[in-house]
Length: 416
Length: 177
Image 1 (tube, rainbow over the protein chains, first blue to last red):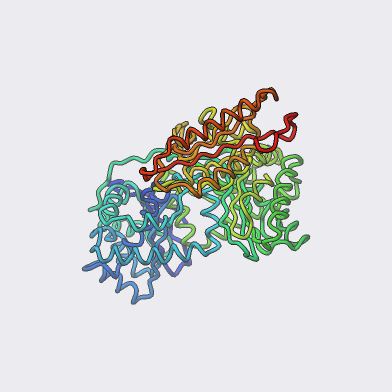
Image 2 (image 1 turned 30 degrees about the vertical axis):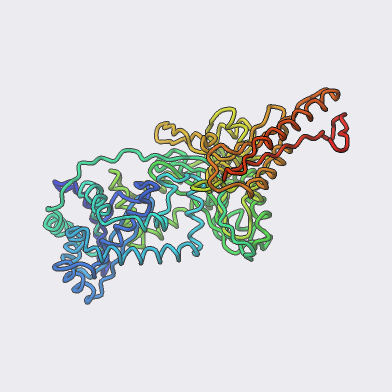
């Protein structure tokens, strides 16, 4: 099960892994482009490009023909945008791999599409945005805003209504010309495939792509803890996230923080899960958040509770943060957390699309994603390192709070 | 919002007043203001963003340290409402002042130019014997404003003056003064 990688002359990276026993093949094209590359005036443009590029019904000629051919053979295709990356992917039967790679290579061939298509996608995105504003996932946008303000990682992926209404077809085309280029992308093919065949197909489908020559440096991050509440007067339930700034990808404290987060918030086993749900019956769901972006990170606990219990829940979370800062964790807790993290990574790797995204993200930054290396780092983490991470990062002074529900910002401010 | 009309000044909390006072002394980042006031940075940022949204505070500088952006906040120069306070003004009194400004604001013309509204507040240790002198001066000020009145002019100004003894004061106001 070798991982093959190559780089075409135009800079496009290629990662291929044959997964024995797979009946299907997943083709993913990932760009180093996301909300982190935007500013307040064009927030949401990466997601907008994703919509326009992948709405093949608007398109003509060969692209539409390929899409219809693949769809009629059961292909599944989709796209997504996040803070750092934009991905387009298809899962097909092995005999459809040439068509899938050709289709992916054609996505930006006629860009931007007709103005009517750009307008139609605008309406769809505004609808998506409206639904998102009433979805529990909004809490992650609010927490990102808490940690990073209104720059790069603090910006919501979907953008804001006012910016979506303003984005023009010319702006979309400019963004594509700059960032949706061979040297800012990786093609990942996983599943039933032959490396040599994939390489030849990729060369044929992508050789017309040009590099932009634009090298991306570090993106800027504003770190200023805050309190952000989406106030819903009279709401019976509350959704909240309490956390602190974490560390960036590759930071020496990243494994310790991941373990600490699991010890505190793992569903079923985490201290806070047991305290808030099993012992006190205050919450239903509770999950941890330990994210390492390329140049910043986040650490926190996300949970939901009755609106009137918000202050109690926040107080208990802060108390537990303080307890773990003072007393550290036990050897048993640490060993269980190590096993949990290893299991989570194995489970994730069994999802081919998730694995493809991990491999793609690593390749875009010149790295190789291997579970073995990550598990080795986790396994080597000591009790002292976890305690030191707790002392360094879980300071009350840098706590941020995001909430959706009947609580007010003043009520939360009084608890910090 | 402070766009084309007078800003909406809601009642300020004591923390907000302290932040405004700190920024009046010198612009600063959320962390610097937090250190000065010994308040959690999250609380400071929350209030700074809120004050920025109503036009009382603005981001006046951006510092770049490595890949870190630090925003420096200061009082907005075109804020239509000023709360001036001497060093001795207490937080409670400033809160009172903010309530007062809100009430006055409701009677202001929406086209009021920047800085046209000043709410001043001070705690002055005035010898009791000189209080009547001060009251006389205020009375003259009001008389002067009235004397300038020209009914032909469409624009007008409002003047509100409050002079009062504090609860810990030895001065007892005389009725009618």
